[in-house]
Amino acid sequence: MIRRKGLFVLLAAVSIAACESFKEAMTAHVDVAARAGTQELSSQHLAEVLSAARVPMRKEVFEDFAKLWVDYQLLGHAAAHGDSLTDRKAIDEAAWGVIAQARLQKFYEQVSKSMTVDSATEANYNQGRLLAVRHILFLTPQQNATPAQVDSVRRVAEATRARVTLANFDAVARKSSQDPGSAAKGGQLPMFGAGEMVPEFEQAARALKPGQISDLVRTQYGFHIIERLPYSQVKDEFSKAWTAKARNVADSTYVSQLEAAGKIEIKKEAPAKVKAIAKDPDAFRDDKTVLATSTAGNFTGASLVRWMKTLPPQARPQIAQAPDSVLPDFVKAMVRNELMLKRADSLKITVDSAEMNQLYTGVRTVVAQLWGALGVDPKSLADSGKTAAERERVAGARVDRYLDDLIAGKRQYVRVPDEIASLLRAKYDWKLVPQGIDRALERAQKVRSASDSATKANQPQSAVPLPGGPPATVPPTSAPPTTQPKP
Image (cartoon, one colour):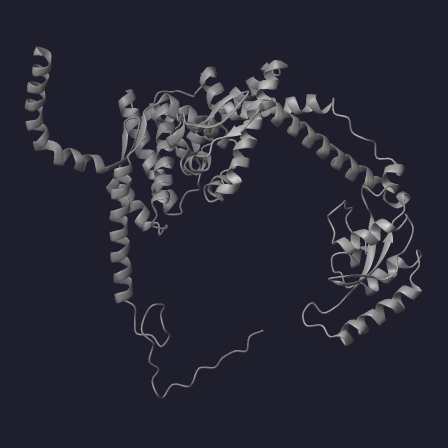
């Protein structure tokens, strides 16, 4: 009881000062949009920079700029301390996705050697599992075709069929076929399998033996004359297509067996969480929400973040906007990767030391290039400041100047690879302040609105109607406008 009473007394004393400074504390909080090392990005500066840049006034745009500022400033902070990010354990963690993909590639190469794939023989070709044909197409009107119109096309097609032979098929197709995609190739189509053509066309092609020409075949497009090509003419093409198809079948079989053995179960709340992670992966890097289970263990939000970073940047917005119905399959694909990594572990598949050394060297090279681009290489900072604190201030000012020039179109954008950004963020202090970013957006919107209003007010009188403005008046003495015909 004594301790509890003492606590209440202490809280009461502190609350008096807290109430006095609460407003100031909250104002200071929202006046900072981001922190990186010892540098701060003020909401005011963020608003000024982006309102002048004529970028869309959306929160995600301001967040992306703040993240870029963080990455650049952390690079400057590292340079101020002469840190070229050489900690190999840290690199291994930051480059987890790169290493995992390399291991998966090695695993696939090893497993594929044990897969049985049928040979591309003439017997397989003759069985029609893949078809190679050329055709001559006579188009019929696609809408409201009269019987007379269709009959007219049929008569032309019949007359052509009467004179087509194996010897002249190529020449006739080039001259008479109305299929723009194949006419210039003598009517030859890409090799195809079951279900890849309209049914009438596929059935007619399968009814032919290699080297035979069909009678007229009617489809929704018109009338076709089809030749099934002999094996001797398409041997090389068939071999490539057959091997690729057989490999796909073997891969699909292996994946199906992997999924069955892995006992993958997707949680019903997974789609909503996936979308949230796709919008802001950094916010979920420690998320322990279970999205799926398998024999590889729990697949959490943090697991997805790691795999998400292996995808191209343009994939993330697509995932965030995807229908919920397709996202369980996306999660399942990521879990399959986990299952394959587990099998790679059992086979002791690793990235060898030479490849890892190449990775470590690559990190140092990229960091040095980024320092040079931003103007914060350690040597130049050492010449500008004797202490680490002085070098940090110089580096921070140079990064801010670089970003100002970037927005003004005076410098080129330099992308910080995700692996380097992860290294920096894991080692140094940084923070995005959502309230500060909101404040910056509000301020920028006001500046933009005032600027747009001033621009509109200063527009000279014009005879040309402006978007959103009143109709322009044309003096009676003006000649009537002319209208150019549309091409």
